[in-house]
Image (cartoon, rainbow, N blue to C red):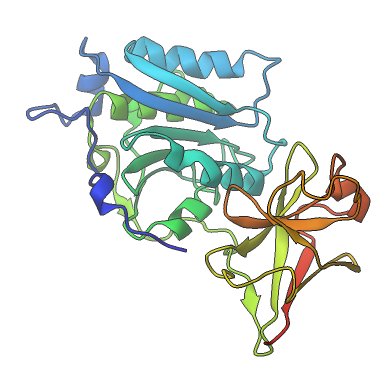
Amino acid sequence: MKQSHKSRGSPGSSPTVKEGSPSNPSALLNSRAIAPAQITLLTDFGTTDSYVAAVKGVILSINPAATIVDITHQIPPQNIEAAAFTLLTCYRSFAVGTIHLAVVDPGVGSSRKAILVSAGGYFFVGPDNGIFSYVLDNENDSRVFHVTAEECFRQPLSNTFHGRDVFAPVVAALSKGIPPESLGPEIQNAVRMASLKPVLFKDGSAQGRIIHVDHFGNCITNFDRAAFLNTNGENMTLLVNGKRIKVLREFYGEGKTDKSAFAIWGSAGFLEISVQSRSAAKKLKAKRGDTATLKIARE
């Protein structure tokens, strides 16, 4: 469900931008000016190697006053949809003006664009591969820019590490007050993944999919609570991999002795499939992308 966030601040502007700020990215990057800013990182880099530290080092060398928050670096390798969903579930938890850097980039070094998104009062920086699809679906006031300001990039530019050499300095430039328009032209054709909206049928049923399996094995579907507000345990049947789920619970610990699968509205606003103290994904042999069908009995 799309919501307007005009009261949260005007996208395309940052709380760190001051009147008279230079519009030349390289001038701002090379200046000694620093500005408090909140930046988040979401990647598939893991924490074993030095990649995350290198990205942080570039940002902090340009703007030492920045605060960097790790969302996660454990996105499954090259799993763009998992990254898009994770970002969707938490970007609004941060203050307006936060800059979200998301890098899951199997196309690094290719002709894919580097983009900057302004949406809902937030900024998003990363590859143009659909990683910001769900944020764009969720906001009415979005703008997308193709980042072409090469004078902003770190040199020498590696074809295998744009997170460090392209995206990190762009994020730092934003954090110091450079406007998005100075980093490249606005575009209308950003790559988008399949919508999160389920397919609705005349009989009241809907076909969706499992969009995420979390650390606990809960299977999160794309059935949105706002769209299925009147769905309850008495009129609902959820079908996944031939299994019928007809119980809708209010909280995970309800029915402690029952080890069958049940549905629950999760904190992200989507219908989840869970099993008490066990993995629903293992019990149902389910994975991300599997079809889920929601049948709602007519009153």
